[in-house]
Length: 218
Ligand code: AP5
Image (cartoon, rainbow, N blue to C red; front, side, top):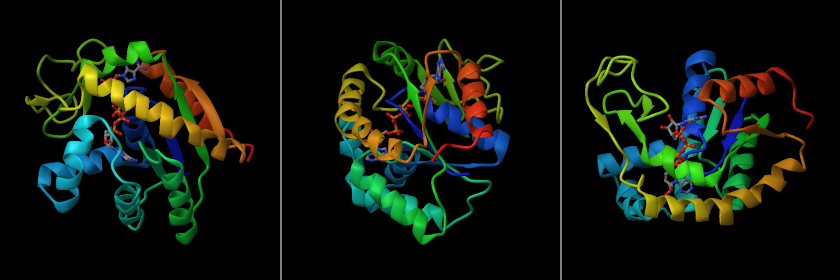
């Protein structure tokens, strides 16, 4: 099963993708994570992407589509969760091509619907384990033991440079202008479902599990 998790910054795409990966053996393909790794490594792609990401704008379609293509050639487990990709019409069309070239197809597009005002709170409170990348939040998801990662026992945590109120507003504007308009492309196929992303992490997860248990209409 191959699915897209769609929603504005902070909607919970990464949180739910990590859970699906852990519980179902699916593979999370997050273009944001891939780009951050490239920035950290100082690779040519990272050097191009760094300033664009820090401004909250979108990296070029060609770069992110190539990153996804490379990963689709690797181990895809029980299916793929596209997290943060596609973000433009050109990326949506590129994804169709990448999948069909590999004899795969898209089964579901799940849109997490959210109240944008609440997202600034979510994003500015977010942090991750510096060792394994497990995600946490100052109020909504703290480690069980203070300053210790539940997943790997690490004691070092970090925050993203683009998780500040100004950049978040640009990221949301980019979502409204370029990403939300791709929904009709998938609605025509009958594979879009919506989940209320404002309920608890567990409730959002249960709603997604319910959708994955039933076949899409398209
Ligand atoms: P990316 O890394 O994809 O960031 P994003 O889309 O802005 O999404 P986030 O990671 O901020 O949010 P999320 O929905 O994953 O929320 P999360 O689960 O962490 O992209 C970063 C940048 O890279 C872009 O701005 C762009 O420059 C570039 N880029 C990436 N992909 C690209 C592409 N395809 N094309 C071009 N450029 C690209 O949750 C947020 C917090 O809330 C967490 O702390 C979590 O614990 C908490 N939380 C989650 N769910 C709930 C809930 N239900 N209730 C309470 N708290 C919750």
